[in-house]
Length: 69
Image: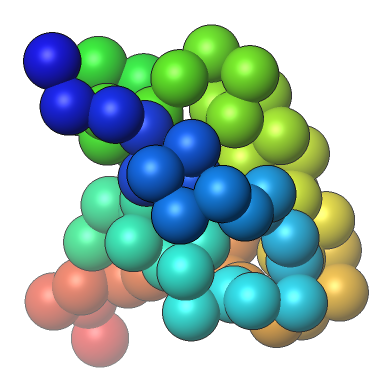
């Protein structure tokens, strides 16, 4: 089984690097679960917290409306 993205690069998820965090969001900007993203449990908890904080700071959107006008 492949290593977690964050364990492999020896980094922790942080709201400041929202380019890395965006990889773990669906096209509708929902948080992708651990089984699909391949992240370990420790980093999934940290990732969820940092995504929610980045949304609070308006660095990431809460939702993405696709095809709606």
